[in-house]
Length: 382
Image (cartoon, rainbow, N blue to C red; front, side, top):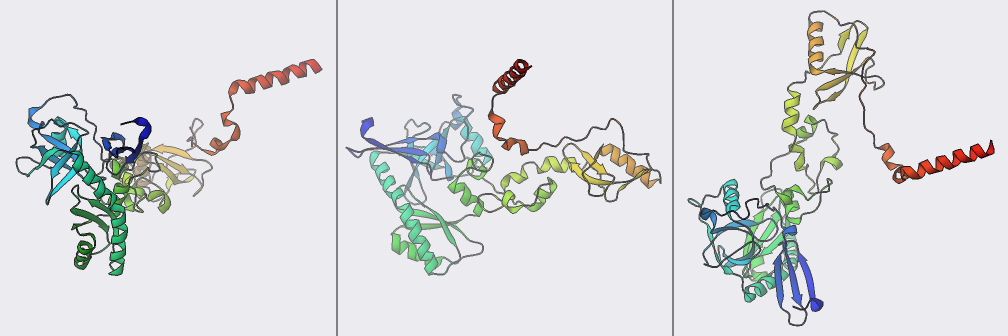
């Protein structure tokens, strides 16, 4: 192809680039690893293992992937477009993994070749297969909009989130979201009459929809649901309470509108720390007064007390062991003398107020030169 007469289109839904020659109309499709959702790093690249040489991971649209066995007799590698076996007809996808790493992924997904029937890879995609595949892809957006209209006309409480056509264009998967059970028997008939294809309805949740669409989270990284999560566990506000987070829906909710999946990441560490922190229901009894619990640093296992209830003016840090010891003394009717000590180290709280200063980017050398000049003027005046 002539580089000056070609147009490049990035298809992030399928992880490839489509390069079209404007003169001949020929299309060159290449695998683009940066757009691959649920990507797995092949850390066993270059290592041979005869047991899994015939198995490959093939990616289709968004997060739909599958494991296939090479029955074509052709040499297949990562990035190749292949025609694979489907329930009806055939499909077209991109090979994303090869070698021993495929065996590890199959074990992780619970796929056993000895028990599970592995579908076949028929051949590498030919120009005719790719052209037909691209024609089917071009119908997806229009089909999704029309499908939403048909569902609304029937009064069904559901949302068509995405449509994925099979590689041969004879079948489409309609991904929908619904809170309850939906009777879509009439809807399937309407879809078949309207689009003249086989119809498969697949229900997904709000988290899975966010994974299909993709995007960046508030952390600046790719969404976990699009990056690696395949099983979505229930997330409750108790995870936020355990980590002493503010129960602010705007901060705790992700792009799907549900609680962020990352709330579950550190719960185990916080629960382990909580098990070693004593429960403080009543104030600690001391000879110079009562000390009230104001703040708890869970991971550091440090509790901060104040002689004034709810006051942050003067805090006295105590370790979990020290608090437990004082509680035991109070139960025996004994009182420690005081928490006030001369060498008490006060907690250092980091504030981001100074980060908004306008002059924070000014170089230090420039400031010193100005001071030296001003000092020289004073000497001359004297």
